Length: 199
Image: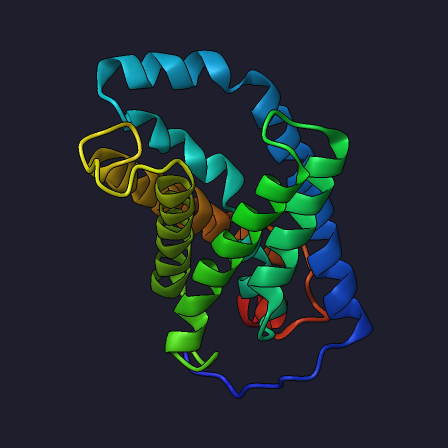
């Protein structure tokens, strides 16, 4: 599943599936936001910034939509839909912050596919997309929490490493294998991504 021709035109089915991924992800993101405080505090008590290991639970919409839909902007679209809907359902960060971080995460996840000109669709690129989404998440948190000079603080180097690792595993590796599992059912036969898996 590597090089492929690029079709930049979005179809109705592309919009529909990317939207479904965004909506489903929003519900999961919202649930995570409700239960995150205790495990977050526990990890940060071990090492400040270690709680970034949980951030992948908010990063997966973008890589998943990108590898299924395979259209420029799919990662950004799905992550923003997820963020906006999570904000509308209500969370502890508010609407503007949730939208902003979702946009940044989606943009960074999209960069992996930009790097290969939307021609490579494999596990490695999906892992890169997840890791970059983590870097975007870290960057937004680092600068919005006014810790741009405190690299050892709770949003510093440890937070960068743990968030990128979380994105790599949850939004990268796990989403690749989720995509493969979905494709094997035939549910993605309208997509090149699905047809590749089923031969």
